[in-house]
Image (spheres, rainbow, N blue to C red):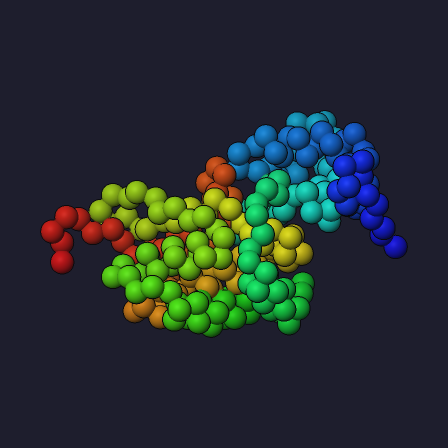
Length: 235
């Protein structure tokens, strides 16, 4: 049974976190990951520390369980199933109603099955349509996506692109990191679905939407290949 105590200044001590940091190796690993802009894989950490890969993975998973790290698969846009990439948690939580809803959705999604991300995406699309219905009207559907994501706490920023290039949004915070740590494939699929639902509700094409965890230094990336920046004067 986990217990909590009270520290000298009156704050609550999070016992699981303190236990996770009771190992000098895990403290070193946490510092390495925090210093890496785009996160690190287990292989990166093992190379940097000289530890055996299996030992490194065990330490990383302990830090994830303690809520100090979050993991997600970052493919860099390449095909195949990439390795887990770990990043330090450092974000304000989403509004309580959204967190409660996301947690409830996770509880009803399959775990450890290949269709987890797909199932989460379907739920996310429905959620995105509902959120878009209450968002201010924008001429550009990407602006509506930004408004919805900003309301959820993702701090989105639209990346400047050349005419004809796909639109990208960089998400500089993740207010659901605790839930991402529990089921990263489901949560990333859920939020990609939200973007798709918002686009579809405003007449856009959401089918090509990709949410790339750690797709840029300090940010996750939403790629919208169905939407491209137009040149000046282009209809």
